[in-house]
Length: 447
Image 1 (cartoon, helix red, strand yellow):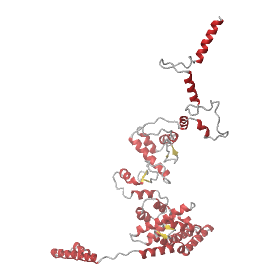
Image 2: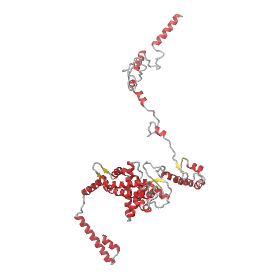
Image 3: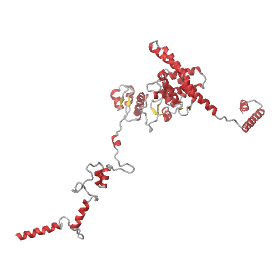
Image 4: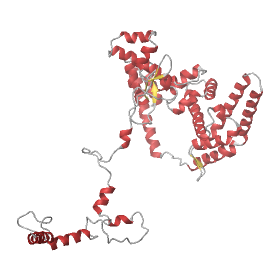
């Protein structure tokens, strides 16, 4: 028994040394020896191997005791580093980025509110609000008398929504009827339905809304709806406002009571028709100054606030900015504007004094009157040194350097021959017809 056990132990020891159980090749053609397997293990444990692990190697010694954050990555294979640094990918189609977009997932659609025409409150569900709170109104009863999702019911709801949103959009257009692609687009209300549309395409909507009627001066008429100033001269509103360009400058001029009073006074003293355009231009000049002053001093809300002695320096800076003053060359792009605006400002101060005097006498009115008179003195004494003197020198220099083009003798000869020819033709026509008609006389005079 002892000899048989010894033989069995010898057999298993021989098989262990030859690694017969663990490293036996499964293919019948090739069988690896023990030396080959030892070489493979040594290659795997070498630092050059891609599967080398320094933590499992007992003989690994780091270069320095205090290693930086990047040093341990020297012994990590490149494939592992690339896999660690790569962000997780998301399956995407053609033309789509594979990176995860958190912004797109986090952004959710938020329904815009509509203002109720009856109670002037913002509501999310407009129809439900009308049914619960304003069912006794005649317009609401007319809406709900039609079938659900019918064309008539949708039209009446749209009209009521536009009227309510007009109250909210009168300060700033928050919810137009149709959104614009560009964020800088301007919107104006329709005078018929009170809906806000892009000012560029307002005339198209007006033709549909007015059922084929003329949409002339659509933008200027729409801007007049946004004017908050109620005490406007009627002639100014009828004759000057339609001529003004519908932009931010004109809207500022129409909303400022002092600028409108200046325009009404100028229109009364100049009754000719061509002064209507001059009145519009002068009102827009004051509006440009006011808009620039609001940028420099946010506490200024209207022209009356700006006409104070403490704002004189800001007024000079605003005038230079509007006139495009070049500090390097000491020149103005529009010197005539810088010279003439002081006259308009003094007249505005005079109008403001009359407004203050009309009120009941008090300490406050006396203070306003004194500050306005001080502002007139500043404009009369200092304006020529700050603005108008430089602008006048610049204007004279530009006129002196302007090249005058004198007509040539050949051009004068051509003009003379043409006039003689036309005069002869007119005389011949009068002799043939033997009557002096208005057309022949005009042709003879004008040529």
